[in-house]
Amino acid sequence: MVDIEETHEAACRSGLSHYLEGDRVVFTRVGLLARGKCCGAGCRHCPYESVPAADPSFLVDTCVSPATVLFFSGGKDSFLALRKLQRQGRNVILLTTFDGNSRTIAHQEVDVEKVVRQATALGVGLVGVPLQRADGEGYVSRIRRGLECVRRRGVDVMALAFGDLHLADIKAWRDKDLAVLGLPLEYPIFHDTPGR
Image 1 (cartoon, one colour):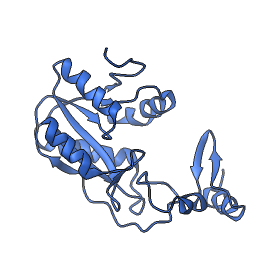
Image 2: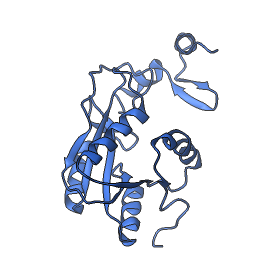
Image 3: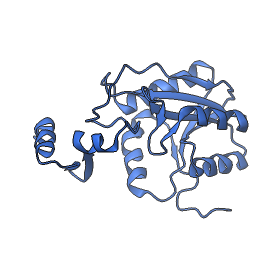
Image 4: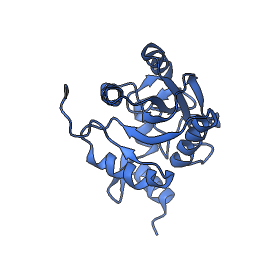
């Protein structure tokens, strides 16, 4: 069994920005400090201050049932997935994850308030799921709690959808890790071309 902390400390002593854990790249404290700020991705070795995450909640309170819950980052692929689902006549509620401290959406590096403005303009509900390293609760558990928030509003969740366009490794990770939630996983624009 690999000792993750020892592997991390050895990489830091060598001044490395990352190390490999199987086929996954894991950033070290050294690499994350070089960024200069938290990216909001919930990195394992994040050196930035952390407080416990709040409970998931509706940030834009528009509920329709039944609904597909679309993981929404505020980027163009998320928007294309939303429009495709809506063209199919489906009700959609957006779900976004963000860092509980910085309120930044990982990878897009935008403030969650931008996505709140998008959802408001689009007239769709938005559930915010703050993530946090400090509480030790895993990603899938936080997503489950976000879905419970939706269901408490009387919404029958039909499926989870994602705006992944080309990243097969991310799709495979979602298929493996999110299958435990017991809902169909859909990728409405995967390998799609814009305009279709």
